[in-house]
Length: 64
Image (cartoon, rainbow, N blue to C red; front, top):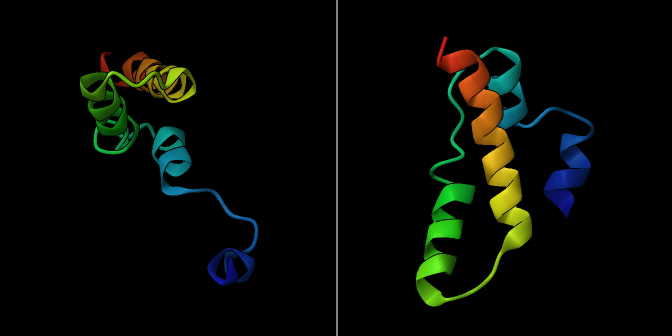
C-alpha cells in the first residue's frame, strides 16, 4: 500500500503501451493466469474478458 500511496495517480505500463500503439505484456500477465486457471479447471471470467479486450485493442493497431 505504501508503494501505491507514493506512486500517486499515473497510467500503468499497459495503458501507456496501448496509447503508444505498442505491444502489451497481456500474454505474460493476464493471458498466463487465464491459461493456468483453465488447466486447473478454475473459472476466471473477469480476467478472461479483460485479457480478450486488451488483445482486441492490440489487434486493432498491430494487425494493420
